[in-house]
Length: 253
Image (cartoon, rainbow, N blue to C red; front, side, top):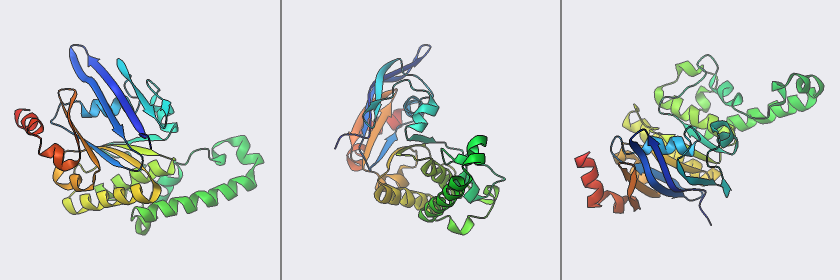
């Protein structure tokens, strides 16, 4: 089976800074791939290019067999490649369940004419969306807080809610920028356990940028190490972490 996501020779410069210098990576279907590296190594720039926030100067990005190089973020999102951010942006006044429902696409009720002339279809669709949202909340361990306002959630629960909204939108793969930032170790493991379960149960793929190697490495299938805009090592977690080139990159900064 071919890669779910493939980036080839990505180059991105900002003035005299070469943030990405020929980066190539692959993410296989139903896998968790991690990108590590010291600050300034190009990890977030890579996520920004893959998600369409930045257009690469050179190279290409292929997702699900389609060349999506240079696509704008909304088009990449509609294709099913969804990014989550370090700081979740939830609708704080809506309930947890409502946060998921507003993320659903092609809702009949969002169009005035459709809502007027397709009322029966709208009601049926709403019921189906609620069932789908409830299943996602169950998978994420958020069923008990479905009726709470999002503002009442803990930071870790908000991160899970953001994952839930991505799933509700029809995501096929998630790009996650430091999903464990600011989360205590116990909840961080819970988040990673949920991610691993989603990989297996829903056949999702994940590309994760994260600094907390002690927590994440035991959950991932493959690791890429970056330094100064380049991939300096790739392989299984044990191989990459034990690579002296990777150790030097972290120690040398």
